[in-house]
Image (cartoon, rainbow, N blue to C red; front, side, top):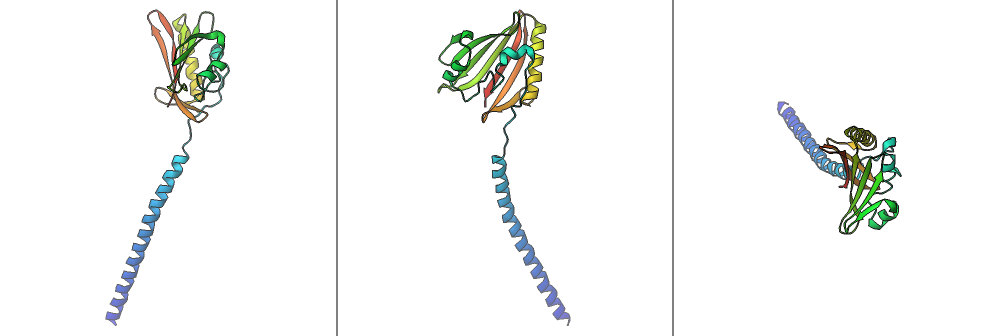
Length: 192
């Protein structure tokens, strides 16, 4: 009888071990498929950074008018010809093969230059804005207003912001300039 019990235990141990191995193998192969599915799903589900509706402060309204697209109704899908049509011809100051330059008045003596840069196929790749101010306090006011606006509109990163418009992701950088003799703000929107 003892031998019969030992045979049953041995048989039961073998059955349990086989079940464990089968379950482990099924989980292992199912785990790989699940990981693959998760990876492909997560890649497809990556969300673009925001371009939240936000209204710039009154001192920036001329710069951002109209408050659509990335800047002034323009986004990174636009080419040179489309930007020329959207911008005010009276504000055009300089044109080169790879850029367009416009000037926009902001306040009594403050103004900005907007430079649109294009790649080899004449598609927009970067927007640079230089705000020129009469005083350092005005430059600080513009910089604070821009920072507040960008914080509402875009995703904040350490030294810049990240946004998207019409499926294109870009970064935004802003710097206060207070050099001897000149004050202002430098802003860049650049396609990633």
